[in-house]
Length: 204
Image 1 (tube, rainbow, N blue to C red):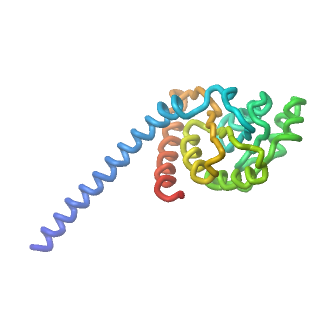
Image 2 (cartoon, rainbow, N blue to C red; image 1 turned 90 degrees about the vertical axis):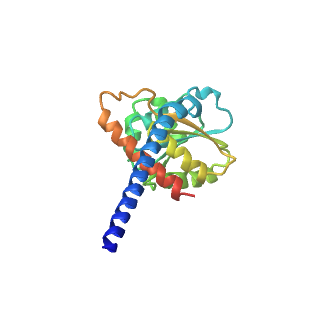
Image 3 (cartoon, rainbow, N blue to C red; image 1 turned 45 degrees about the vertical axis):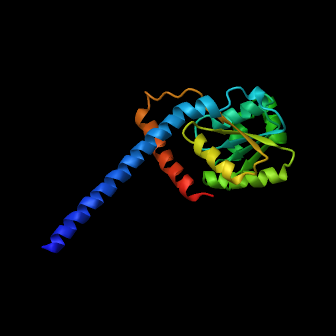
């Protein structure tokens, strides 16, 4: 009889712990969406790259819509001296895409660098650190990625890149059509939220 009561008490405690865990996750997700759509766009992201000073390197993290195009556009407009494209991609395909534009093709020959080793954001940051060590003239970077990925990228890069390098985050796409692809974006946001929890807990 005593064992039955102990088991009931254990189940009640377990339910309380489980409820607390899910409520914490839900509260954290609310906090995350607030940061994603309010705090970061209004206070962290750079909307006017002409305000950025110093010897600037542009870092594009591949894997999302318009990221590479945004990086090339920033480079061609003179907002950075060098561009590093980091992630999973085929350099030949990128070069072919811009080869019909003479000015951009020439930029690829002189000022665009490729990192194909990185398979995730942490590896991106590690490879960018190596690239910065080889390009010591660069004292600030423009970090280009998608709205859902950029906050976590900033967290990781600030942990891995030396503090003397200033980071200026810029969105690859300013306006996203959330209504048209609501569930697709919701999946991205939830997935990224779980990765943010992992980043906060385990990445040093």
